[in-house]
Image 1 (cartoon, rainbow, N blue to C red):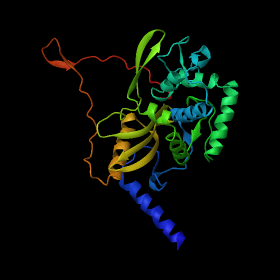
Image 2 (cartoon, rainbow, N blue to C red):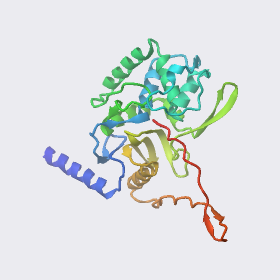
Image 3 (spheres, rainbow, N blue to C red):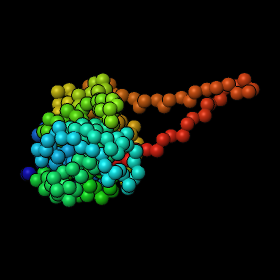
Image 4 (cartoon, one colour):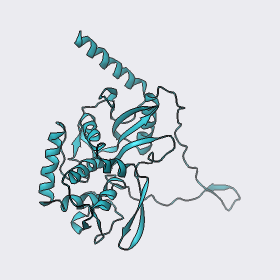
Length: 299
């Protein structure tokens, strides 16, 4: 009888996943009771990019370090693997709390690297603490080599990452920082404004209790969110979407599914039209565009 009930539940979840268009390669959505609402390839192991930083933050906070202690960004913190950009210059000094803010909210890789470097015992002790946390959370399909997510060797599954997200949401500091839309940080005497990498944070109609984005070429576009919609709470993990717009559309469709379709479907935002300029013959032609900047890795 129990086997038949479990099979029926699995078929129901699979049917729901088919009914909801999902562009991400792996998806898992659960409610507060741990019930699976949607599932797609939830046990496929894949790179997790900057979703890693939620683990980094938990390990740092578990260590009860002085969050007011000044930390200086060192040349060792510079990304030599992906050569990703950072607005935090080498030599900048700020409280550990601001470094954590930059690592989580704006997904800065130098900030995350410095948190591991200044951990008691250095990166080796930090990695050991991460492994202990992975075991404590029962994340049996997860491997994390370093604190930023730049390494493709940082891998997990949607099933394991739901455990990580559920644990991270219990830390008030992580919940607050990851749902800040922006913050102003003192960088070498200048007030610099940083923004959340998830554009749904602060968006009209969204009640978000936890958020973290991720991107590398290997991982694709990733997202973890805890949301409240129509009085229902849900935690979602999206892995390996091909574009930022795809993971946003997935999140919109999941929210609509949770609410039972009570809210209007949100259409994909139209592409910006190129500006027109007059040609010598009087006709209009598209103005030339600047070359796009290099994508940031491990966002």
